[in-house]
Length: 295
Figure 1 (spheres, rainbow, N blue to C red):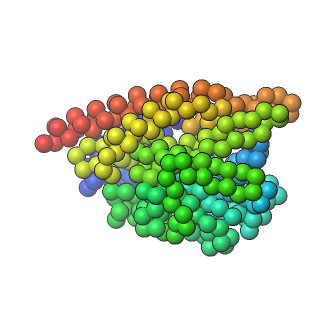
Figure 2: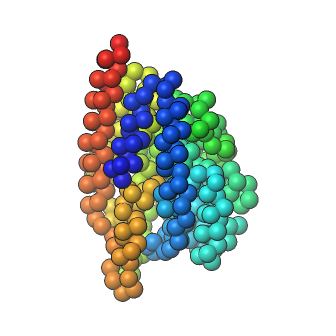
Figure 3: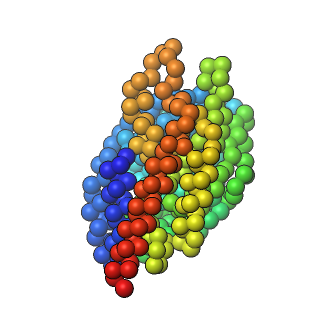
């Protein structure tokens, strides 16, 4: 994860004029991993992994249909649909599509899947214009990081709930990575135990500008509030938009019948958030120094 995060954060230091070619170079490096297939599996309780080797996508099975959490790059949409089918699920049973954040690598399949299923798309209210415009905030004209626009059926804010059958997810506003970055919390059954699960939106700097002409207004305060919230949350299972966030591949390899689920790791979110905050402080200092040098 550190390599990926460092590469993303480095991109944010470039001026807009130089950034386009840099983004293209970066995408050429990561697209292979982001589009490499990964065998779908039951992660814990009624949560299933249907994403790629580099981008996480989830299916949540409920008593009244399916909830899809995020997608991946547009070229991986067929792969995601195949993964859903491999698990014995029907695409047409998807009733809700939830989004963590409106970035191209997690929204590329929304328009296609929404059209095929008639599912309702639910996202953070501050990300609604991004999803419906198909652009990266602060870089609206850069088609390299754009995606097919899609209508948002419901915009959520802190504490809003989404219920389908026997499953309820609670939205938590965790802005910074995107203005409407939304983390989703739910409870699952793990044997005879209840486990609190969080689909953490993200907290990396990525392509964001923090100073000068920030990617979105109030971005530094947004990140600070998200780090404080994440460090205070009591979560048993941390999930995220990229497998590296929670060591998905390593934990998947450790799964064995009758053994404790390796994805249950209380305290992992707080540790991860503290690391994100340290990296953020470094990137903020670098961007501030670069801005001062250029003036």
